[in-house]
Length: 232
Image: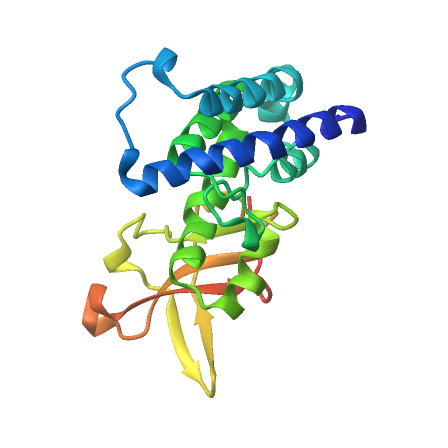
């Protein structure tokens, strides 16, 4: 379990590091990005993030990872702490609950989380890249307020519904349908091997509006998870 004092220490450190990493990210956006050939050449901001996440992983993930895997446990307390550190929405702007850092910081954070517990690294990666990423890139301001901010901050968890029984991860062969009824799409179908599904409050779902159009008839949308059942 994560003690409150430990959480406060990590969260305070994370806030300071996020500000430094955000400045580094802005430098990259301004054309001063560079290739880092070794860990020793990383700017101090990134090395500090690495050290912070590594310390968290060593303390909170490594001692528990094997037991979680054996018992099929979702590490809810640790995932909550990761969200409070800004690591469930690393590249999402701060105005939408994220850390406002760049992909270098994201890669470092996921690497260190995964070093401590691969499953926890995947949980964070799916929420960051496969759920928050599309909403941040393509959502309206209103959609971001509803479907991004709670997920980037880690108060809720998202998942990504692509893979299907029989179709695997072939997006062009997805059989889940999205039928427009009034002003809403009604989804029908089955998804499989969906990371975070049992804990998620919303999903990015791949579905087809017209099977005859194959990949051109695909729709990717955020769906609230209700009227849905999950099986192990």
